Length: 351
Image (cartoon, rainbow, N blue to C red; front, side):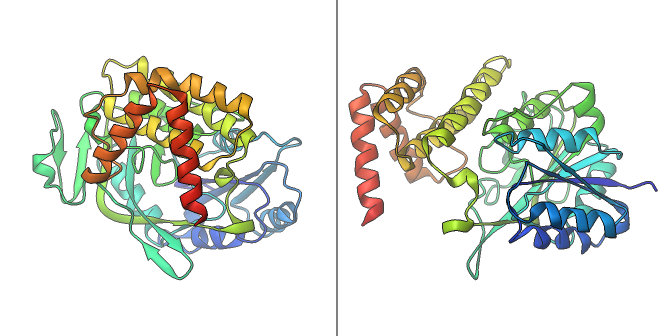
């Protein structure tokens, strides 16, 4: 049977919420019969594998795969999902989140209508019984006033032919997330784009690599298609574990991303600044042994020194932007300042 979209879900110990994610794909208005669902398990030690076996036995359009050894991040499972996909378009879904009902239809319609390489949409966040709309810097701007050197505006849709010509549209908070997008598979294969293995920021690296090769990029500035679940306590995502091994994986991905950005013709200063702020936030939440803490801060010091005091952070509002810029510049002078700020942050967090 020929499907229209491949949806790839990486799993690891997801027994408590995987079926919610799968059901959100089943309930798509495009029709589940048009979707190839590929689930790749990263050697779970709970009941996830049994759930996958049952799903694949009962649905011919659900393919499941299991790694013999845990790879350490979602990167390798997603690579395997791409390898086994059979459609022209690929989407991603995390095992603890869900698609809103129109997600697949609207995204497929947009990428085919404009013959695009990639389409990006909005998302909401679910926390307990609340739905949160994250800050989105394009929301309050008239699209006609955005500095688009070669862009077009069509009914809350922005089309551009090169992210290098439009660096202001690259943002850590929305535009390099993996799961609020649809990708043309041909562009992935042609440019040999793959996820990092065993590192975090693997999604940011993948999307950046894709955007730098894409010839037509589409932003749906009003459509909400994805619901990101904020989990707390034992149910929280492994990516929210700020232990030393996890921070090391974040640093691996951060350094790879910064190297990737350096190779581009545009300096992407705002985007680099967002990465620097984000990895610093991860450090603030973490508890590192003294030896690695010093190594971490010594690695970061050149980035703090290069950070521009007038950096515009698309992922936050202006007052916070100014405060963050001041602190990041201060961190470039001394590791002691950064450590002091981190200790103060952790004390306030415990209050």
